[in-house]
Image (cartoon, rainbow, N blue to C red; front, side, top):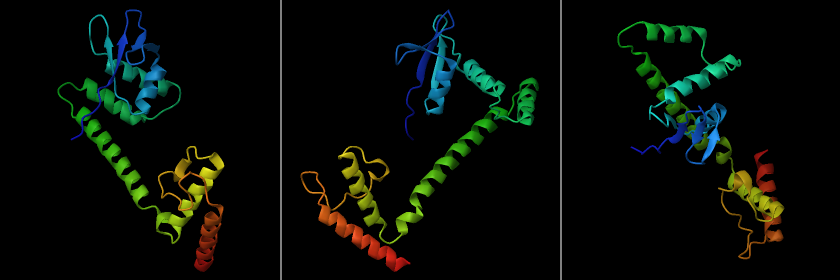
Length: 185
């Protein structure tokens, strides 16, 4: 089991201002919403009492987004939530919602893994050569700075030890690629 990083600690001052303890600056609810969208967990505590206010602020963020027309929760779901709060006794709704979101997150990560693993282009004959060619081209165009999406692919064979491209090798690779592509047609 992997250890989850500690949540970003936000302190609420008596003035109701929210203070990010990592960056030592004040933040807004929109900033906190951004942290959460970026995958950070947050914990909001009252500086004076030490009370955990996270739930209260997260609900406020949701309410503000819903009021701006960014509706995510259907009215039926909201009604069911209100009923679960007003129903008295222990409700299974919180556990159900938590399990549902965990399943959603797991499903999304598996879909992304499968998409990366089953890239149909990777099975195409000559794809490695094409990817190497793109890498060499991008390096030539950017002067060896960041190469974009092809950076994790194989290094072009045309690159010499000084980092410059051998133009003849690139031309040869391009001709081989064109040859393979014409044979596929």
